[in-house]
Amino acid sequence: MPAPKTLYFAELGPIWADWIQVVNVGNAPARVTCLARNGEGKAVWSAENTVQPFQGWVPPVEEVKEMTWLEITSDQPIVAERHMHRGSEVIDLPGAAPENKTAGKRLFFAELSAGARDWFRILNINNVEAHVSMIIRNAEGRVLRQLSRVIPPLRWVDITDQHIGDVRGTVEIVSTQVVVAERHLHYQGGKTAVGQLGQVIE
Image (cartoon, rainbow, N blue to C red; front, side, top):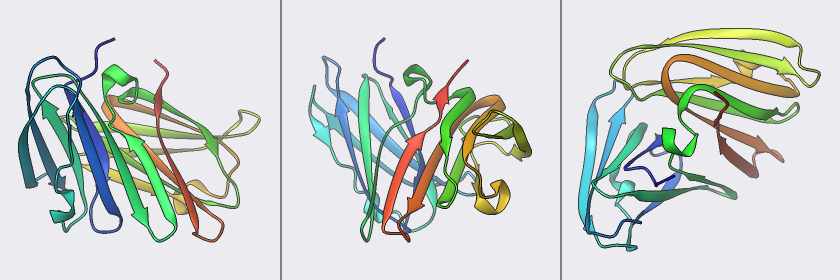
């Protein structure tokens, strides 16, 4: 499957020190555009560059001073990686895309961890609202609770342990629109963090 021409990062902003690299994996120069949108879905920052085949570009995302999400578009196939740094915590995530099975209408997270701190962001990448259900199951597969949210166009919702509870199990997200979902797991008293994207299962 060819690499996508649009990638999404569900979180970007001042809470973490972010570093992103975009690579043109096409055979011609790529015009690459980065666009950050705030919590109201409004564009607040952008950057553009022409990137040669298999050249990497590090956009100056440190200029973004508010909580946003990032869309990267290109006229050639691209891959991208984001490192997030905060003290001893480091999270490394690729850009999400339907082609990579990391953006879709049904996403799955294979682990919820009891005794640690879970944080989810669900991002609606569409121009229409998304009706989203989050199904929390225990390790035996029994449904413990279900959360419902309506996410306006080009906006996000954050879900934490306060909504989920202290559960060892799994999370399924079902949406009427294509969404990106990102999870951070914080443990060892906030010294360590891991991140993952929801996997499309349908």
